Length: 299
Image 1: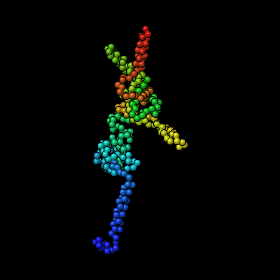
Image 2 (image 1 turned 90 degrees about the vertical axis):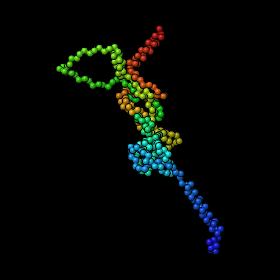
Image 3 (image 1 turned 45 degrees about the vertical axis):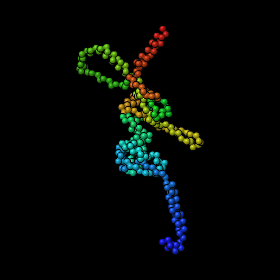
Image 4 (image 1 turned 120 degrees about the horizontal axis):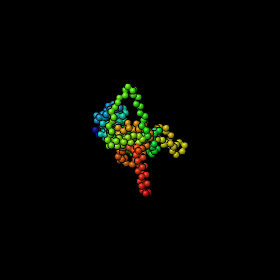
């Protein structure tokens, strides 16, 4: 066969060189195309349409290869399946769509949504505490950072007006037997309970409430006139997002409505024990004991 090719006048050396050049060019072009192709990553995608509130199961997830771009960090890597299973869908996810961290409430989405923190604290809620409430006293919103522990002390000066008892008609008057005189111990207990009637102050969270986020702060923006920075005046309501037990939501809500004063203070550790509350009469007793101690010492 080589003799036939040679008899046609084709130079075998030239043919070999041409084939070598072609192969080298083909390999180089493939390498160049592969080098220009962006890298890929494996992310989790949905195998079916997921609606808000659906609990994610293992069969709802699949690993999908996508090009790595600026939005790749928003996707959930394929190796984090265990952190997604059992989570709750917070935004609609369509079949084949890569799953964004902000689209679910699960361990793999922590740090992307406020509600994601509740996965670690069952039985708790995120409560918005408005810092501009008329009866609330606190440091400026800029003084708080996520992770801070705060105490909320409610001060009540008067009890809400009670409904007056209707006047009893003469023909409805019933003669009652004289009441038994209570024992001295019962009288002391009744007096102690009576002294707890407002005015009083009470710490609602002796162990402290955790600040999850601070909302309504002025956003810092770059000025177009010079290289300095300026602040954009934001009229949004300033509030703290607190992590509180579910049973404390009603207490804190009522304190915001009926409390004469709410004092928000920063706490160091939050290991304080619950107290019975500090009343006005306790305040008087404190003054009396201090006065007796000072006057007794002078003698």
